[in-house]
Image 1 (cartoon, one colour):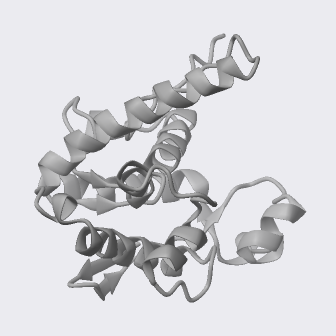
Image 2 (cartoon, one colour):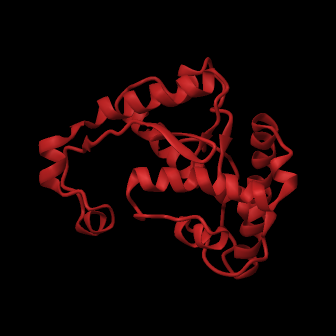
Length: 211
């Protein structure tokens, strides 16, 4: 996690979790963290999830926006981990409300330039906007690139720059829901009659563990 002002890092917080189970080889190939390192240097996963949730909610409580690329994935995954360990949820820590404000360059870019061809992963979208991504899949590098990408999108699209964090957050809820509905319709027209695309953003409802 990196604190950014005017596109430059001003502080950083970093956690390494020991998941307590073997890390798949394909995951090690992506992020470069071996089982040996996670065991030797990592903290128990429940402690890391709890600490990360506390820091994030401390920002939201004071109105500081959190930038996360594909926020619905990351925040839902964190929420699932909190529930798995019996820890207070993000909503519980925020008095029953959803995390906000969140700025998600993935959702914003997909709305403002919806017909652009090509991939929409962090590397591809950084290349589109001329944002340097020094080391893809390194957590700190990805976080800094996401923050700079949010600024670059605003620079290119004045209508985005004109929105304050709270207004932009609410617009992203609408944009994500519209994208999900369109994508679901597309999949069904392609023959998957039961296709369902969750349109909740920035936090999806977790499946009932009793099912």
